Length: 354
Ligand code: NAD
Ligand code: TYD
Image (cartoon, rainbow, N blue to C red):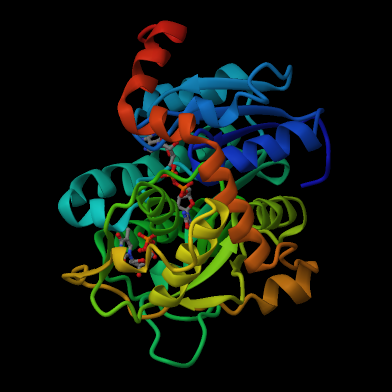
């Protein structure tokens, strides 16, 4: 999009990646009006955004993306020019126990947003953009070699990845059927501050700190490609402004780690930062039953994004993990809030039942 006085809905802006993206856009683009549309599930937390909450170009709307009437009203009230859609149920383990919620939010919620955008932008598509943020998990699982490209066929295995794959298909269907101006990106595993402590990295840092077992699924040989969350936000910014309409871009860290190697690194860094004896938390490693349908390996080929738009990650992994461990160790209060339910009370006190 060419820079102007845009009004942009960022959905899921109170979540992990969304909060980094909202912060970036609010600070870097004072002429844009940023509407954070988020229903504040257990994973959404306004404490992730206290530093930008009172910025004049930032507005928070508490609402469910599955509520079509509400989404229509947000488009009309704010005269929305663009959407960057991140709101989702995002944790694979939860999708295994509660697949319906994943279909509802990730598929029906995306459909509500697409349809509201189509209705509101009707006939004026050229000035608008619907950016859909997706995951590399839609491509399925790799063996020991090879990479996911934008042309890899979809082969999702978990209810989470199936729901994200379905949402991607709906986005492309709206592009092809209604000429909705869309762009998509599929990113590898993110890490960094403000991630809910159910995902591997924040969960394990917290457990190491408190001397709790580290539940390694299966044999720990599964591989993930890790990217620092601010580098994902920077890639979204670039694709939003310069990406080709209708296209898809893969985003990845070019940074593959076997789970067990990553866990040993987390132990080494966390023990060191806590001033403990080297390796003293190794004994916390506890092999447990494997996750059902556990994908062996994810690895992204991000060469299209690099060659077409000049993107490259800014943060090297060792530095990013040092920074991330330090952040979780120094932000005990944030961890306590997001895990204790006290945040819900805080919200009711601050905003009432809105
Ligand atoms: P998250 O779980 O931390 O945050 C999700 C946010 O969406 C929360 O603020 C939550 O309150 C909100 N939300 C959930 N359901 C909603 C609903 N029905 N209506 C309105 N808001 C709702 O997720 P995340 O890790 O920040 O992921 C954001 C997006 O990026 C997701 O679409 C995810 O699929 C994608 N993604 C994540 C990763 C990763 O490693 N975390 C990697 C690639 C892509
Ligand atoms: P996770 O952070 O849930 O991300 P994803 O499943 O979307 O890649 O998990 C990352 C890897 O760590 C994955 O292979 C599953 C594994 N894992 C464990 O071994 N133990 C755990 O307690 C968790 C949460 C994940």
